[in-house]
Length: 303
Image: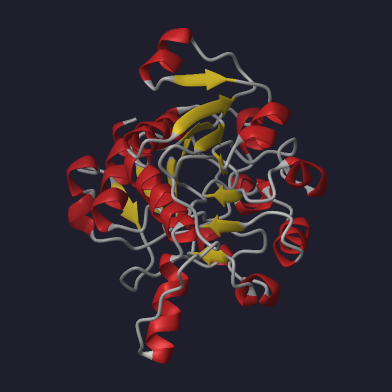
């Protein structure tokens, strides 16, 4: 049996799983295959492991004559043409559990960074090197007692709820699928409609998968439903938020601020986003911790 990894990750992380298997990886440490190299490598492979959102489209899938399994080392499948794989009888696996806690931690981190002005304070103090304070400062927001609206109440949404509740926030949620009452009770959360959530929440955080239906889910119309002093947080997928609409809302102070770990035009960030003062941005790094990536790989290979 032959297994191909899109990236050359340290062998000690997976050696116990591939005993008696033919393993193919790029030559250089941590390097990834080019498209052409990957297509050649998987010609006779049984398993292909995609790492770090490596694109596995129909053309690449068709290169694997014997392909039986595609493993995506991530929480979603948006980089894999799952429909085409299904047509060819290829199983597609992912690693949704290992990412939960680290993603939820990062959501809280960037939310606090935005609401409490951590990033801006850091920039200003490094620049001016003087500790200055205002008697009444209206830019930031205390999160205790405020309402967090969670859009998508799955594993990650619930992990965020657990942390936010510990901060003293009230939790409301919207999910396209019914949420069991015992789950809501666990977090003292209330399930509401989407429009009600957008109207009520002081912070809106997104935890839905990226699909054709959720492309630009948060568009100009939905952002306009948010409170003028609310914040938007996105650590799901970039194109769930229409960047043009968000930039407009932030520039015109239609909402107070935003925190993004994901971006519509990754790997690039627009100048408009980068220049906004009322936004915290990180480079899609919720799981960018070695122990998390190792856990994701093991979860995938265990599957």
